[in-house]
Length: 330
Image (cartoon, rainbow, N blue to C red; front, side, top):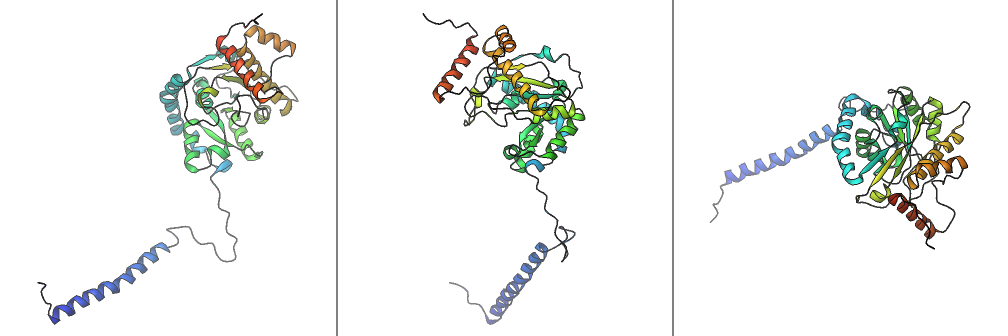
Protein backbone atom coordinates (compact mmCIF):
# COMPACT_ATOMS: atom_id res chain seq x y z
CA UNK A 1 0.00 0.00 0.00
CA UNK A 2 1.44 3.40 -1.02
CA UNK A 3 2.66 5.58 1.80
CA UNK A 4 0.55 8.69 2.38
CA UNK A 5 2.61 11.88 2.02
CA UNK A 6 2.46 14.53 4.67
CA UNK A 7 1.58 18.11 3.89
CA UNK A 8 5.22 19.19 4.30
CA UNK A 9 6.44 16.49 1.86
CA UNK A 10 3.79 17.48 -0.70
CA UNK A 11 4.94 21.11 -0.53
CA UNK A 12 8.60 20.07 -0.97
CA UNK A 13 7.80 17.92 -4.05
CA UNK A 14 5.77 20.76 -5.53
CA UNK A 15 8.67 23.21 -5.11
CA UNK A 16 11.02 20.74 -6.87
CA UNK A 17 8.65 20.37 -9.82
CA UNK A 18 8.18 24.15 -10.18
CA UNK A 19 11.94 24.63 -10.03
CA UNK A 20 12.56 22.05 -12.75
CA UNK A 21 9.84 23.48 -15.01
CA UNK A 22 11.06 27.00 -14.43
CA UNK A 23 14.63 26.10 -15.52
CA UNK A 24 13.52 24.45 -18.79
CA UNK A 25 12.81 27.71 -20.65
CA UNK A 26 16.12 29.03 -19.42
CA UNK A 27 17.99 26.03 -20.83
CA UNK A 28 16.13 26.38 -24.13
CA UNK A 29 17.12 30.04 -24.26
CA UNK A 30 20.78 29.05 -23.71
CA UNK A 31 20.68 26.57 -26.63
CA UNK A 32 18.99 29.19 -28.81
CA UNK A 33 21.71 31.71 -27.92
CA UNK A 34 24.44 29.22 -28.98
CA UNK A 35 22.73 28.55 -32.29
CA UNK A 36 22.37 32.25 -33.04
CA UNK A 37 25.98 33.02 -32.13
CA UNK A 38 27.66 35.01 -34.88
CA UNK A 39 31.26 36.10 -35.36
CA UNK A 40 33.82 34.69 -34.47
CA UNK A 41 32.09 31.29 -34.34
CA UNK A 42 30.62 31.74 -37.80
CA UNK A 43 31.06 34.17 -40.69
CA UNK A 44 30.10 37.74 -39.93
CA UNK A 45 26.74 38.93 -41.24
CA UNK A 46 26.81 41.13 -44.32
CA UNK A 47 26.04 44.74 -43.32
CA UNK A 48 22.80 46.29 -44.50
CA UNK A 49 23.15 48.13 -47.79
CA UNK A 50 26.04 45.97 -49.00
CA UNK A 51 25.46 43.36 -51.70
CA UNK A 52 26.41 39.91 -50.33
CA UNK A 53 29.24 38.07 -52.09
CA UNK A 54 28.20 35.23 -54.36
CA UNK A 55 28.87 31.89 -52.69
CA UNK A 56 31.51 30.03 -54.69
CA UNK A 57 30.51 26.61 -55.91
CA UNK A 58 32.99 23.79 -55.42
CA UNK A 59 31.36 21.45 -57.90
CA UNK A 60 31.79 20.99 -61.64
CA UNK A 61 34.56 22.86 -63.43
CA UNK A 62 35.07 25.11 -60.39
CA UNK A 63 36.13 22.23 -58.16
CA UNK A 64 39.65 22.92 -56.78
CA UNK A 65 42.15 20.11 -57.51
CA UNK A 66 45.43 21.80 -56.57
CA UNK A 67 45.74 19.64 -53.44
CA UNK A 68 45.64 16.47 -55.58
CA UNK A 69 48.85 17.48 -57.37
CA UNK A 70 50.87 17.91 -54.19
CA UNK A 71 53.36 15.30 -53.03
CA UNK A 72 51.19 13.47 -50.43
CA UNK A 73 48.29 12.99 -52.86
CA UNK A 74 50.64 11.98 -55.69
CA UNK A 75 52.25 9.40 -53.42
CA UNK A 76 48.86 7.92 -52.50
CA UNK A 77 47.87 7.85 -56.17
CA UNK A 78 51.08 6.15 -57.29
CA UNK A 79 50.86 3.51 -54.54
CA UNK A 80 47.18 2.78 -55.24
CA UNK A 81 47.92 2.45 -58.97
CA UNK A 82 50.85 0.09 -58.46
CA UNK A 83 49.47 -1.98 -55.57
CA UNK A 84 45.74 -2.07 -56.36
CA UNK A 85 44.84 -0.95 -59.89
CA UNK A 86 47.62 -2.82 -61.70
CA UNK A 87 46.88 -6.28 -60.17
CA UNK A 88 43.13 -5.78 -60.61
CA UNK A 89 43.46 -4.77 -64.27
CA UNK A 90 45.92 -7.60 -64.88
CA UNK A 91 43.26 -10.04 -63.65
CA UNK A 92 40.21 -8.45 -65.30
CA UNK A 93 41.68 -7.16 -68.57
CA UNK A 94 44.74 -9.39 -69.23
CA UNK A 95 46.26 -6.47 -71.19
CA UNK A 96 48.73 -6.84 -74.03
CA UNK A 97 50.73 -3.63 -74.44
CA UNK A 98 52.55 -2.69 -77.64
CA UNK A 99 54.22 0.37 -79.15
CA UNK A 100 56.45 1.44 -76.27
CA UNK A 101 59.36 1.60 -78.73
CA UNK A 102 57.56 4.42 -80.55
CA UNK A 103 57.92 6.64 -77.44
CA UNK A 104 61.69 6.34 -77.22
CA UNK A 105 62.27 9.59 -79.10
CA UNK A 106 60.49 11.65 -76.45
CA UNK A 107 62.44 13.37 -73.71
CA UNK A 108 62.00 11.99 -70.19
CA UNK A 109 60.59 15.24 -68.83
CA UNK A 110 58.66 16.10 -71.97
CA UNK A 111 55.00 16.87 -71.24
CA UNK A 112 52.83 14.65 -73.43
CA UNK A 113 49.12 14.61 -74.31
CA UNK A 114 47.84 11.02 -74.36
CA UNK A 115 44.72 10.55 -76.49
CA UNK A 116 42.66 7.36 -76.74
CA UNK A 117 39.31 6.02 -77.87
CA UNK A 118 36.74 5.47 -75.13
CA UNK A 119 34.45 2.44 -74.78
CA UNK A 120 34.39 1.59 -71.08
CA UNK A 121 34.95 2.72 -67.49
CA UNK A 122 37.87 0.27 -67.56
CA UNK A 123 39.71 2.53 -70.02
CA UNK A 124 40.99 4.96 -67.37
CA UNK A 125 42.55 2.44 -64.95
CA UNK A 126 43.90 0.43 -67.89
CA UNK A 127 45.65 3.49 -69.31
CA UNK A 128 46.90 4.62 -65.90
CA UNK A 129 48.59 1.24 -65.47
CA UNK A 130 49.94 1.23 -69.05
CA UNK A 131 51.45 4.71 -69.47
CA UNK A 132 55.18 4.59 -68.60
CA UNK A 133 55.89 5.73 -65.05
CA UNK A 134 58.11 8.61 -66.19
CA UNK A 135 54.94 10.38 -67.39
CA UNK A 136 52.54 8.78 -64.92
CA UNK A 137 54.26 10.47 -61.97
CA UNK A 138 53.09 13.87 -63.25
CA UNK A 139 49.86 13.06 -65.06
CA UNK A 140 46.44 14.70 -64.97
CA UNK A 141 43.31 13.13 -66.44
CA UNK A 142 40.55 15.07 -68.16
CA UNK A 143 37.28 13.93 -66.52
CA UNK A 144 33.74 15.01 -67.32
CA UNK A 145 32.77 17.71 -64.82
CA UNK A 146 29.09 16.77 -64.93
CA UNK A 147 29.82 13.11 -64.14
CA UNK A 148 32.90 12.82 -61.91
CA UNK A 149 32.46 16.13 -60.08
CA UNK A 150 28.76 16.10 -59.26
CA UNK A 151 29.52 15.92 -55.52
CA UNK A 152 32.41 16.82 -53.25
CA UNK A 153 32.98 13.18 -52.33
CA UNK A 154 33.05 11.96 -55.93
CA UNK A 155 35.25 14.85 -57.02
CA UNK A 156 37.68 14.27 -54.16
CA UNK A 157 38.02 10.54 -54.89
CA UNK A 158 38.47 11.17 -58.63
CA UNK A 159 41.10 13.84 -58.05
CA UNK A 160 42.98 11.74 -55.49
CA UNK A 161 43.06 8.33 -57.15
CA UNK A 162 43.18 9.14 -60.89
CA UNK A 163 44.45 12.73 -60.86
CA UNK A 164 41.22 13.94 -62.45
CA UNK A 165 40.70 17.55 -63.41
CA UNK A 166 37.17 18.71 -64.38
CA UNK A 167 36.48 19.31 -68.07
CA UNK A 168 33.16 20.60 -69.38
CA UNK A 169 31.60 18.43 -72.08
CA UNK A 170 28.66 20.62 -73.04
CA UNK A 171 30.44 23.97 -73.28
CA UNK A 172 33.88 25.43 -73.80
CA UNK A 173 35.35 26.63 -70.51
CA UNK A 174 38.18 29.10 -71.08
CA UNK A 175 39.26 28.93 -67.43
CA UNK A 176 39.49 25.13 -67.52
CA UNK A 177 41.49 25.03 -70.77
CA UNK A 178 43.84 27.77 -69.53
CA UNK A 179 44.44 25.84 -66.31
CA UNK A 180 45.26 22.62 -68.19
CA UNK A 181 47.51 24.52 -70.62
CA UNK A 182 49.38 26.08 -67.70
CA UNK A 183 49.95 22.65 -66.15
CA UNK A 184 51.20 21.21 -69.45
CA UNK A 185 53.66 24.10 -69.81
CA UNK A 186 54.91 23.31 -66.28
CA UNK A 187 55.70 19.70 -67.20
CA UNK A 188 52.43 17.90 -66.43
CA UNK A 189 51.28 15.33 -68.99
CA UNK A 190 47.61 15.15 -69.86
CA UNK A 191 45.39 12.14 -70.62
CA UNK A 192 42.02 12.65 -72.29
CA UNK A 193 39.34 10.85 -74.29
CA UNK A 194 38.44 13.28 -77.12
CA UNK A 195 35.14 11.51 -77.86
CA UNK A 196 33.73 13.17 -74.73
CA UNK A 197 32.11 10.00 -73.38
CA UNK A 198 31.89 6.25 -73.67
CA UNK A 199 30.69 4.72 -76.91
CA UNK A 200 26.98 3.85 -76.75
CA UNK A 201 27.15 1.06 -79.35
CA UNK A 202 30.77 -0.10 -79.61
CA UNK A 203 31.64 2.22 -82.51
CA UNK A 204 33.77 5.33 -82.17
CA UNK A 205 32.48 8.89 -81.99
CA UNK A 206 33.96 12.00 -83.64
CA UNK A 207 36.91 13.49 -81.80
CA UNK A 208 36.55 16.93 -80.28
CA UNK A 209 39.26 19.51 -80.79
CA UNK A 210 40.25 20.12 -77.16
CA UNK A 211 43.38 17.95 -77.20
CA UNK A 212 44.49 19.43 -80.53
CA UNK A 213 43.99 22.96 -79.20
CA UNK A 214 46.12 22.25 -76.11
CA UNK A 215 48.84 20.64 -78.21
CA UNK A 216 49.07 23.66 -80.49
CA UNK A 217 48.94 26.14 -77.62
CA UNK A 218 51.60 24.34 -75.54
CA UNK A 219 53.63 22.91 -78.44
CA UNK A 220 53.30 19.46 -76.85
CA UNK A 221 53.28 16.15 -78.73
CA UNK A 222 50.17 14.00 -78.90
CA UNK A 223 50.53 10.24 -78.41
CA UNK A 224 47.59 8.39 -80.04
CA UNK A 225 46.48 5.22 -78.24
CA UNK A 226 44.01 2.57 -79.32
CA UNK A 227 42.23 0.45 -76.72
CA UNK A 228 40.72 -2.83 -77.87
CA UNK A 229 38.47 -5.17 -75.89
CA UNK A 230 37.56 -2.85 -73.02
CA UNK A 231 33.96 -2.63 -74.21
CA UNK A 232 33.53 -6.28 -73.23
CA UNK A 233 34.55 -5.52 -69.63
CA UNK A 234 32.29 -2.67 -68.60
CA UNK A 235 30.57 -1.00 -71.52
CA UNK A 236 28.04 1.78 -71.19
CA UNK A 237 24.87 0.61 -69.44
CA UNK A 238 26.54 -2.22 -67.50
CA UNK A 239 27.12 -2.21 -63.73
CA UNK A 240 29.29 -5.25 -63.05
CA UNK A 241 32.53 -5.90 -64.95
CA UNK A 242 33.46 -9.21 -66.54
CA UNK A 243 36.84 -10.54 -67.58
CA UNK A 244 38.09 -10.07 -71.13
CA UNK A 245 41.38 -9.81 -72.96
CA UNK A 246 42.42 -6.31 -74.03
CA UNK A 247 45.16 -4.63 -76.02
CA UNK A 248 46.76 -1.20 -75.56
CA UNK A 249 48.55 0.10 -78.68
CA UNK A 250 50.72 3.22 -78.47
CA UNK A 251 51.23 5.14 -81.69
CA UNK A 252 53.97 7.42 -82.95
CA UNK A 253 53.88 10.88 -81.30
CA UNK A 254 52.38 13.62 -83.47
CA UNK A 255 53.56 17.24 -83.35
CA UNK A 256 51.48 20.16 -84.64
CA UNK A 257 52.93 21.87 -87.67
CA UNK A 258 53.36 25.59 -88.08
CA UNK A 259 50.10 27.50 -88.61
CA UNK A 260 48.11 24.34 -87.80
CA UNK A 261 44.54 24.86 -86.62
CA UNK A 262 42.86 22.72 -84.00
CA UNK A 263 40.20 21.33 -86.33
CA UNK A 264 42.58 19.87 -88.92
CA UNK A 265 45.00 18.66 -86.26
CA UNK A 266 42.15 16.92 -84.43
CA UNK A 267 41.38 15.05 -87.66
CA UNK A 268 45.02 13.92 -87.85
CA UNK A 269 44.85 12.62 -84.27
CA UNK A 270 41.64 10.72 -84.97
CA UNK A 271 43.18 9.30 -88.14
CA UNK A 272 46.23 8.10 -86.18
CA UNK A 273 44.00 6.24 -83.69
CA UNK A 274 42.04 4.75 -86.61
CA UNK A 275 45.29 3.47 -88.15
CA UNK A 276 46.13 1.74 -84.86
CA UNK A 277 42.66 0.17 -84.86
CA UNK A 278 43.18 -1.01 -88.44
CA UNK A 279 46.51 -2.51 -87.42
CA UNK A 280 44.75 -4.34 -84.58
CA UNK A 281 41.94 -5.66 -86.81
CA UNK A 282 44.27 -6.79 -89.62
CA UNK A 283 48.05 -6.59 -89.40
CA UNK A 284 50.79 -3.98 -89.72
CA UNK A 285 51.37 -4.50 -93.46
CA UNK A 286 47.72 -4.26 -94.46
CA UNK A 287 47.27 -1.22 -92.19
CA UNK A 288 50.21 0.49 -93.90
CA UNK A 289 48.77 -0.26 -97.34
CA UNK A 290 45.43 1.22 -96.27
CA UNK A 291 47.19 4.27 -94.83
CA UNK A 292 49.17 5.09 -97.99
CA UNK A 293 46.19 4.46 -100.25
CA UNK A 294 43.88 6.58 -98.08
CA UNK A 295 41.59 3.63 -97.31
CA UNK A 296 42.00 3.37 -93.53
CA UNK A 297 38.57 2.57 -92.01
CA UNK A 298 37.25 5.28 -89.72
CA UNK A 299 36.41 4.71 -86.06
CA UNK A 300 32.77 5.65 -86.67
CA UNK A 301 30.09 3.23 -87.82
CA UNK A 302 29.32 3.04 -91.56
CA UNK A 303 26.09 4.50 -92.89
CA UNK A 304 24.13 1.24 -92.74
CA UNK A 305 21.33 -0.28 -90.68
CA UNK A 306 21.73 -0.91 -86.97
CA UNK A 307 21.76 -4.71 -87.33
CA UNK A 308 24.51 -4.52 -89.96
CA UNK A 309 26.51 -2.15 -87.73
CA UNK A 310 26.37 -4.70 -84.92
CA UNK A 311 27.23 -7.55 -87.29
CA UNK A 312 30.17 -5.67 -88.82
CA UNK A 313 31.51 -4.77 -85.37
CA UNK A 314 31.27 -8.41 -84.27
CA UNK A 315 33.05 -9.56 -87.42
CA UNK A 316 35.91 -7.09 -86.86
CA UNK A 317 36.23 -8.27 -83.25
CA UNK A 318 36.44 -11.90 -84.34
CA UNK A 319 39.09 -10.99 -86.91
CA UNK A 320 41.14 -9.27 -84.25
CA UNK A 321 40.80 -12.22 -81.86
CA UNK A 322 41.71 -14.87 -84.42
CA UNK A 323 44.30 -12.73 -86.23
CA UNK A 324 44.03 -15.02 -89.25
CA UNK A 325 43.27 -14.47 -92.93
CA UNK A 326 39.61 -15.19 -93.49
CA UNK A 327 39.09 -16.71 -96.97
CA UNK A 328 35.63 -16.78 -98.53
CA UNK A 329 33.82 -20.10 -98.77
CA UNK A 330 33.28 -21.11 -102.42
